[in-house]
Image (tube, rainbow, N blue to C red; front, side, top):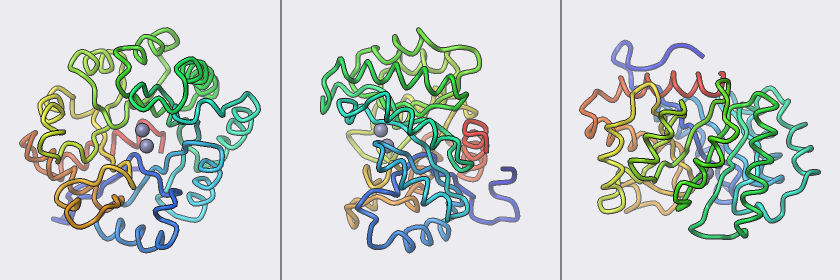
Length: 269
Ligand SMILES: [Zn+2]
Ligand SMILES: [Zn+2]
C-alpha cells in the first residue's frame, strides 16, 4: 500500500500495527470503534489472533472491513491448549488473502498462564510453521531473560521477517533484535510516566525504518485517555504517535509516514 503521511497539511495517516478487535470488549460497538479510528486517521489496522476462535473471528472481521488485516497464531498464554491439529487449521486459515502474518507467538514468563515447556514447544512449532509458509511473524516477549532471542536465533534465516510487539525489554534485547533485522512495536506504555521511562530512552536507539506503532487495544490505554477510558481502541494510537514525536523530536507526520511504510513492508501489504 503506497501513500501516507502529511501531504497537503492533512492529519497523518496511521497504521495500528497490533490490536485485538475480536476481543469481547468491542462486542457491542465495533462499528463505532472502527469509524472513530478512521476519523482519527487510522486507515489500516492489524487485528491479531491469540487462540483458534479469535483467529477465525479476526479473519471474518478483516474480510468485511477495508483497511483491516488479520494474523493467526496461538499466544503463549494459550500454549497449553495448542496441538498439531490446531496448527494445521491455522495454516489453512492463513491462506486467506487478508491474513498477513503469523502471531502473536512467543514466551511470557511473567504471567505463566501456560507452563514453560508448553510455551517453548509451541513457540518453536509455530516458528517452523510460519517460516515454512513464508509469513512474517508477530512476537510477544515478557520477562524471558533472553530466552526468546535464544530460540529465535536458532531458526532465523535471511528471509525471516518479524516484529517484537509491545517492546518492553532491555537495551541488550533491543540491540540483538535490531541486529537480526526485526521491527520493534511501540505501544501506549511510552506515554505512561513511570512505566514508560525506560522505553522513552530506548526508542531513540531504534532506526526510523524499523519502528512500528500499535495500541494492543483493548489493553494498554495511553495517557491521557486512561483518565477517561478503561478500554483502549485503535483511534488512540495517535497518542503513541504524539509521544514519539516529542521524544524523537520529529514531526508526527514523518513518524506516521515511516511507520506506515514499515508496517506495509513487514506485512507485505
Ligand atoms: Zn502481546
Ligand atoms: Zn496483543
